[in-house]
Length: 180
Image (tube, rainbow, N blue to C red):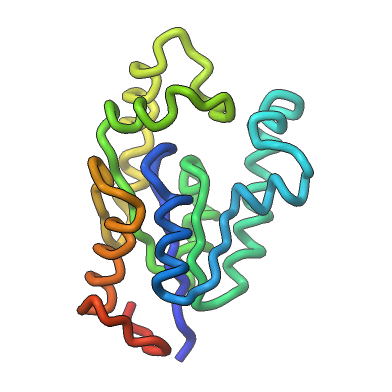
């Protein structure tokens, strides 16, 4: 049996990258951060891609990176917040993946991203309002996850522990078993 990928989805600032790293360390799985792969391949930040080439170009790069990532098995894959808005991306991620949505309140998200200069969708005079608007628009896509975890007030390690415990049934991980 092929070991499914564990795919972390959710809005920006919910902790996908940090939790993905902690979960990879805890489980021994390889981490594939889609946004990081794009930045490495393009040799520039995603914000720069948005600014110079536009969102449509970035979304094509993202689709290519997801198609490449899902060829692997037994991985932990972290996506950008908008990746699941594309039906092809969602289908590819679900084909051999177990989707886990990370959630946080708009207030927590704002606190986590307010000082970031690398969030191209948050260039607004009303960042908290924009977070609420985007979060509400994307909620139906995040609802398609197999499981959801709230990250408010928790460290990445705590969330990774919750996910591992839920998926593996205990805090002692049983490697090599396809439990999800």
